[in-house]
Image (cartoon, rainbow, N blue to C red):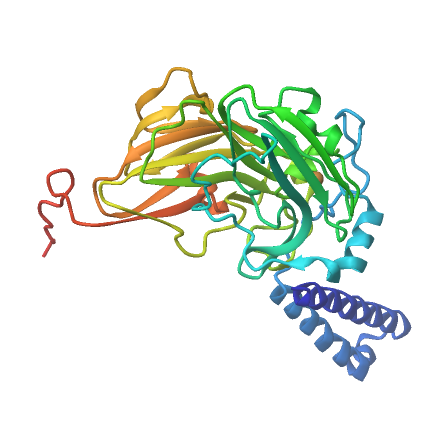
Length: 407
Ligand SMILES: [Cu+2]
């Protein structure tokens, strides 16, 4: 993953040496005729052309204002800026080999616990999570240093029951370079547990809370700079199921939208550094459904299945307009409020940053359905996933009539 960086660095060094040689020689031999006869000029010119060529090949797309601004400022509480300090960058590059290389960062959308986690014998539901900084691919050959819960983005979907007493143990993997914590929006109490779970690398902390309100809640890292931690992939969803349980459906899926701020243009390959300036401006290069750009469909259903999707938005800047192309939501739990009024026959559901929604629909016609953020420019940045529905055609609902071809 560093080959692009190495390629780029070498071409810059060679280019600078070639230009410097040409300038020095030019300064020495003011006579142009003599100057062009020099072998060193020929070699330097060739080297310069090669350097420009390799520089282009290495997909040079760094923003002109070195995009990891070391000296930017923040007015967030505590004032810690979103950029990673220069020493942090050095730390990263000197320690890069200790990070786990995760083959597939994207949480499996099928990974929805079928029921609420059972309490232990003492009546307490115990959840363990591990904060871990890893390296994985946003898309083939585009690597990013993700900060995760359990080595995946989003973190695992958690499911507890209204009224449960829940103990959350957060361990920060010893390989981490940063402190982390967890703020669960399902918690009633300061910081949602963030302060109580603030862990340095290698540490574990536990806190408990009572799940008072049913609903689908975002959890995320709230270590300053909070937006930096979130936009490295540290978020997930916790469902607090109501006492009377949600109706059984045929398929449940787990999708969380999130943003990745990377240096340079979309598609730049190699290990791409985080871009704090783009984060502050709210201009992500990638908007993902489950952490990365989909490489193959992962959601399958059969005609007639009733589907429920738990949708979250890890943010940190964009409001999501969640839509399934070719379907209408039979039921939406607006803002994932459980117990509030439901919406029916809805085309697009609002998913706020740090918020969520629950949508339900029955699939009647086979085919591939695209889940999107209907701010459709974001499809170019990865905000889509496919749901494949298999089964018999239903011509009563959807069919072609005639296909005329112009002669
Ligand atoms: Cu964190």
